[in-house]
Image (cartoon, rainbow, N blue to C red; front, side, top):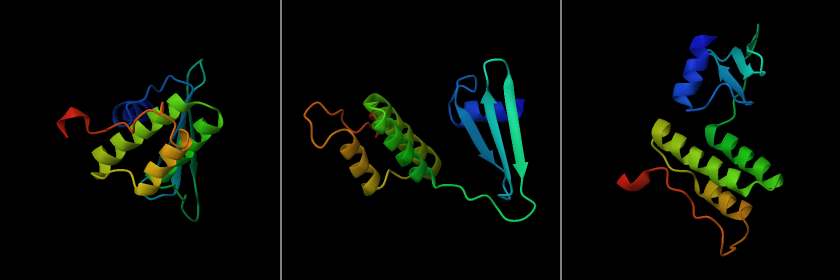
Length: 128
């Protein structure tokens, strides 16, 4: 469990002692582990399928769904944060930028051309 928590903290740069639930899959696709801090201690739930494999969403699709959820809750700052994280993860792990459809979704979620809409954050920083 400690190794999985360390992996979440280093690979995702996330605090495992937050209220978030982290899902990790095994290499063969037949195992899923859920890591969650319930305020009292770290919990680890695991499920291994006897037949078949878990179907994981694509990285970019996941972030787009997360942006939609934050937008529905009126959390535009969280939408900006999630988009920036998506950019960073796609760039660092896959060497790509978000797709055109993700950029359009980001702009739409923040309000159809409002002048005070935050700019699309750059994951590449000042060195790009």
